Length: 192
Image 1 (tube, helix red, strand yellow):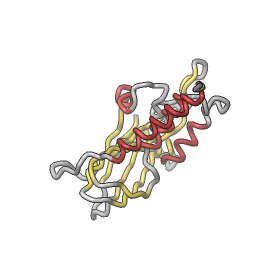
Image 2 (image 1 turned 135 degrees about the horizontal axis):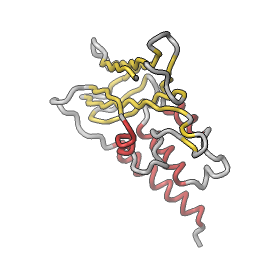
Image 3 (image 1 turned 90 degrees about the horizontal axis):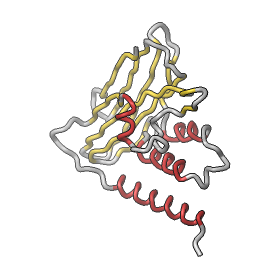
């Protein structure tokens, strides 16, 4: 007889296999598209496109009915279109306009997983399918680190900035992506 816990473990395993299979089959490189495109994911409508269920989407801020949002996220989307496997280096910061104080900090995959672990009920982590989906989404969509190898083809990764809610405004967003080209790909924006 199969127990409820065994079914959840099996479903989690199937989800992981499917997620890794989808990562292995990247869309082929296109000569017509730029090598790197950096943009800001704006609003819940766009973050919901990453994953439809807001309870399993790690790019939507945690909140409670009493306190509201704990933090404010600023999500950067990086679209890659690489002719070959490429070493990627990322420099990213959000600083206040009036000084050098950080308004928000960029998080790589492990930092983002650690962030969400703080909000998880540790008694329910093993049995919580939504938590498992959220962690798998981070593993497959968040940048692995600030220096990493990216496979050839077209793919999308996300770089979350996390700051206190609300972020100090005005603030300047600055992201550079190095691919070995002479000039890095840049993104700047003012959060006001």
